Length: 323
Ligand SMILES: Cc1cc2nc3c(=O)[nH]c(=O)nc-3n(C[C@H](O)[C@H](O)[C@H](O)COP(=O)(O)O)c2cc1C
Image 1 (cartoon, rainbow, N blue to C red):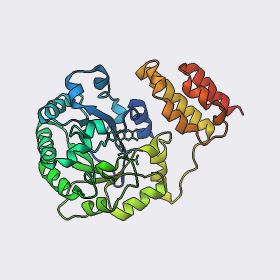
Image 2 (cartoon, protein in one colour; image 1 turned 45 degrees about the vertical axis):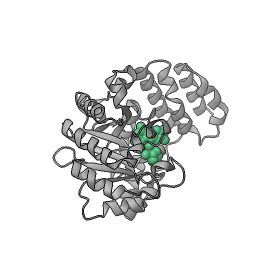
Image 3 (cartoon, helix red, strand yellow; image 1 turned 90 degrees about the horizontal axis):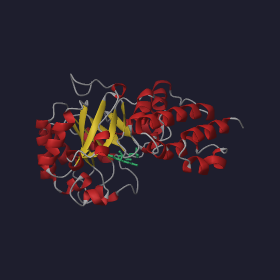
Image 4 (cartoon, rainbow, N blue to C red; image 1 turned 30 degrees about the horizontal axis):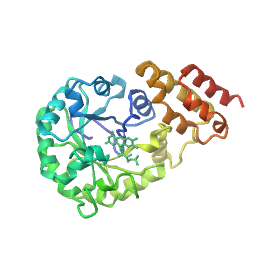
């Protein structure tokens, strides 16, 4: 059991990673349905939240069926982060997750996201203040350290644990690495197996298949793995991983018809919750990844991802199944 007494998660927990512009409510619901044990919102700026930006406030809403759900917060000023955490409590998430891992220059340069890896005392101070302010468990998602010369993740984990966080997710890259190179899980395993670390440790980075997932669990003994990019256009990856663990076999991938049904539901719900044209725009990256393996998609993709009429997109999808 993780987060004792508050949230119960199974062994080999499977988490959907927070992803900006991707992990909206409809996609999170689909991932939960396919077996993700917990999901996260995309990151939310403390500063924008305190300015009551409509787009930011929208990111905080979720459906009950998504629970357990974490809302993710980022920023670099302690008072702002703490006040934002208090406001987030009114949305009653299961977990408040702090982002100390985003490498985007405009964020890290200001000392937020992965930029905080360069100032561990500030990271610990902000975390301790948020733990005090929040009425739900606080978790952190971060990276191995700022760069290869500062692989501080063990020290960071121990200090954040002392500050009161209830779990840590470690992406096996450094801050200055962005998304380049490969995720290195060696240090994630060392943190998990350190005798001083008692909180759950979740690993993240480059898991694409059930085989990858199994290998990472075996290599590191982590409590859970968090999956990001591999779930886009493939929310059934969570089911595949569970089935693979249970039976040793990966279920056959959904065929075109099943994917059309799923993508149609995704699009329809997306338009319902986000309106037009946003609901359609936000579907484009998903659509490409739902269908890219199918030859027939090559003939319709341009039309499908430039179209703003959901009815027309549904028609194009259905037409693919008629061949
Ligand atoms: C499009 C995109 C948006 C992302 N947005 C966030 C975010 O809002 N918060 C966060 O902590 N990480 C974010 N990430 C990082 C992912 O959560 C994850 O750490 C990273 O993609 C590595 O995992 P993966 O190899 O399974 O994709 C984002 C990644 C991508 C590709």
